Image (tube, rainbow, N blue to C red; front, side, top):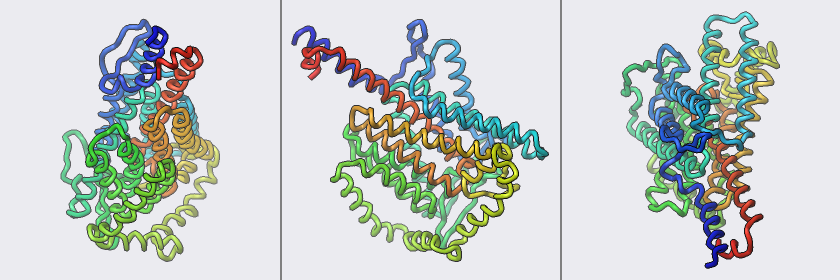
Length: 477
């Protein structure tokens, strides 16, 4: 091989391996060019995920109230660590992948505007305290997006991070399935020193047609099922990754997460999973699509024996949508609109204040968009919609620039997961549920990082193509 060919081969290998050479270790570089050793954002976010998924949502640090979940407290510490590292020069923030960060900035601005509006009206002390907690929670959400999208710069790092989220989700799904069969609420027996039960979100046993609807470590069956639906496309993408070995290792998460969704007997989770699959499965090869559909159809028969009565309950549950008389939950949701509309009319632009429409005082709206319209007004609702759209856009834009099947599949899984969260938010007060909100903003941060990483890899490929000589390309081949 000629010298030019060797150089070309080296460049090509560097481009293709740029995301793989950090599969086990991430290094940071100061502005002076020295390598920094220390905390890894991937490890810190993994610790956050661990607390989010395995510490029951009802357990909090009592002095912080609803903002005192261990995961949220850690996310604030991670943001503090990132800020100090940025100021000291230990981390140089990424300069690409801005759509999600800009959308989150707009959302935070609307929260601040609604806070000012809340403080200018005749507000109760309970609502004022809740508004203060809302600012803390919004800071933690913004911190997740900032830290993930600006400090994680390699594809393998976000891939491993989501892989860990799927593993944790698989364990959470297994706990929920165990609860359903054993009729035991596992989280009731979990006590952690220093944490108290938040009565506002404490888990209660919920039955439908004699079937226990499991919550696992989530605060409610709906939250549990929607979180599983958000993780399902990632589990499928990882199962189809040709670089991973072992059928049981790849497909067990898909089976457990997929089975946990109907076990929750939740329309929200099933609809969210359907949306995720409708956006994800059509991108597969025809053989993969038909095989998956055949497996799904064949699984209905064993499901009938493994969970007697579940299919009939779900069928009747969805049939209730055809008429309000057949579904109490439909009647409840529609009556919420007429009950809550006067609050919207009072402050249609800026809202009553983020976090001030307390469910224990005013009742649940069963619709995150209606809830945001009340608290943040038209500005807040528009910003929330833009945030979801930014997440979908980032996944789709990154996918178009991806250079291999694994990267493309990951981008489409992001699209499906964010879309599932967006649709499910119309069926329950999603942002009031800590596990859903914590996972959603983490995924949005990953979407921002993914878009920036794919942009950088695509730019490097184009630059090499533009400067490479024919001998370089021959050597690369």
